[in-house]
Image 1: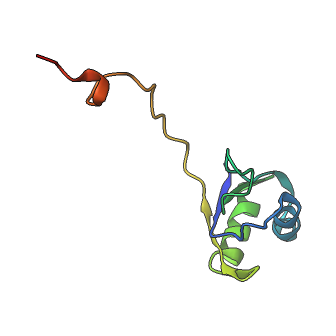
Image 2: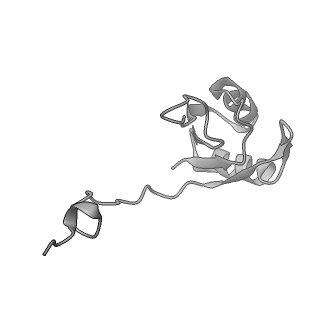
Length: 99
């Protein structure tokens, strides 16, 4: 499982998160999603630790804590929802019937 970390400063780096969460156990992976167009962090991240106990300790200690001028939201990450493929159909200018 992994941890969702939200309400982060946009200047966040993976190393910052690794150091902070490392105080509660072994950090296996840190992922900071970036905006496709700007390449800048999107204000949230995912942290994976070695055990559930370490993740629980980090969540307990860091959820709501102020860090880099913001109050972090830290909780268990939910599995990514399958949005399915984007299929055609529906309205739009190209689908108008013309008489």
